[in-house]
Image 1 (cartoon, rainbow, N blue to C red):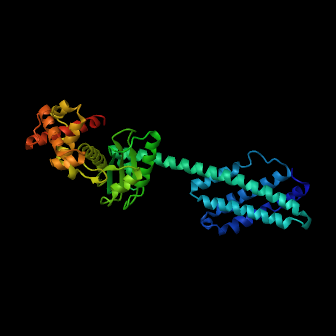
Image 2: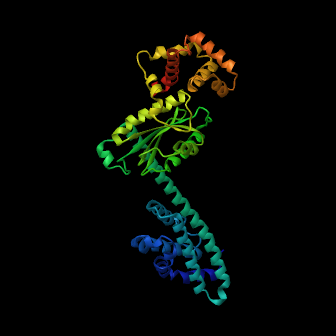
Length: 403
């Protein structure tokens, strides 16, 4: 229950609501960093009106408790508007704190010497009300910021998908919210085979970290957009980064750190938006070849790095027959792994043995068994080329068929 003395003090204070609003909006709030840059109509109209509303809401709630249930509606509306305008949250909360301090000064000035108990009552109620208002304002502000961020992310995702797939026309490019002039760095990002298998939550967390890392690519001049791939796919995503005339040093390590696991990264440049779809198709194939060929993750691969493998893995009339050469050992993963490592390590049996953690003689026996089952003679140039083509076609044809 509120005492009669506290109610009487509140009634006297309400008469100063207008003057307090003017003082706060035109003088006191100027001490808050960034407040002076707000438009005059915001300071003189909206903020002043919010102060008057808050003061009267509190004081009338003291005189006629409880306060109206929807009294905080204006605070929510103003918080959403400030969030949309990009006003920092700290500025908003500081203005509310200064408003509470200003009302406390009015209470102190209006109080008579014998009303110390009433002052204590009002201050107690004021601090409780401040807690409620700060909670309401912060919650609504953050909700609006999250909604705006989600909207921008959705727009960016649609843009990059259309850019990558060739769906942007010249008119779209001219009216885009981001600079598409070029140069544009096109990336394909594939998870290493050793990356942990995450559920949906872990998958989204990794992509969120990757998207954040892309937004901080060193040397990027404009924007970085990620088009993520379906969960469980071979690729973590395709991306377009503006303003990068060269591949930034340490790019693969930077993106892998954001993703939380080592990534295969393939890169190609497009001079303008029209060149992005072809560059995107190329880098997707480069990542698949790098993975299939056992090339190291955690570095940037270009088409020039895998020209032979790229050519050998192109589908053609004989592709299925060449890939089928390894069908007799399809149920022998140790033989396929040995072949992959042996080709990657330039037919060095000792290096292959060290990579697989086996004795060199074991490598010899496995390769001999593979030759006996498939007819592929790795001691001849022709047999080695056939084995490389068969391995690449076998390991890349399923993803390629799936799009």
